Image (cartoon, rainbow, N blue to C red; front, side):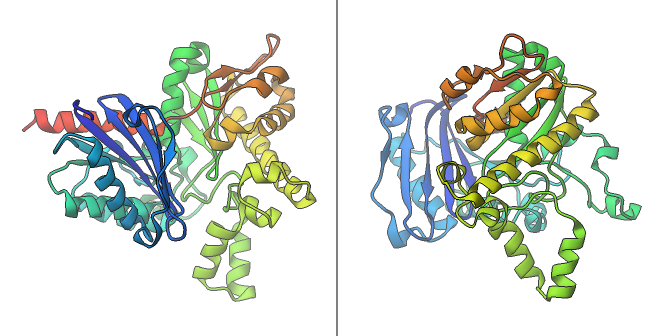
Length: 400
């Protein structure tokens, strides 16, 4: 049982609901409901659960939507807590538009977030679903929305612009940047483990089913590969990344696709899955001998090299590279391929350290002669959300 004030952190998606439970700033358990809509199951680990990893029986027809998953998860978690001992719930919300900080959830805020849902359709609607259900079932539990876009608020306006008529920028058509909660965590860890990189110039690579790069200067976001929506930048699991706008026009005007068909192709059928025709999962592709899998991997790494080079040129040089995210933390061959392509800037990867690195441990992977530090830093977006949630709730209570 947890007796300390508790914060539940939720990260809702279309097919999964990730969670972490904190006593203050200390994580006591985490897990996920996966397979929502087909074979949903709940897996958990952590000290609250006696430090064992276990999976509950399949949730079946009771868990067909994100709303079902949220209801099941909170009901189950409360069995581990003292009565009424869930003090606040923090949510990862992908798109916050021009909001500059985490916010306590209000009806007005929900309205703003709904208007941004078309820019992140794989995440935003499901983030909002969870928030709305909790507000209905537990109206007395405060909720805080933490946005992936906020960390990138330090990017200069010039870097945010598209070369479109000026009035569109004023209406919000600009580059925002994503994975900001992850990059906020990485910047904080760099301050501890690599102070030279923190005060210098770093390119952090959050590589997973969603993937992006962030140029960090003095620990702040200087520029990013992501843009107006969660489609831009690197090749991702099912998203194409940077794309000539003429391709969109071609599909609409010449092929005759409607907007819904194009949207589904770009969000659900492209990226690693589209190129390989096999899977959106990098581990599956790395274990495949098919040439299409190899091509998907090579294009994934090529785009990282290409866009990292652009960010490095804007930074005026580089002091460190950080790998994080599911692929960045687990896939040593991807780290090796990317570093090989960046040897021209003085990157020298220690191959033995890279191969031996554990996905859940921070590690310096560069050789002694490398001019650029190479780091593996597992991200922890949930801890950032818990911290902001405590901060927001504390400020709110103190002002009452």
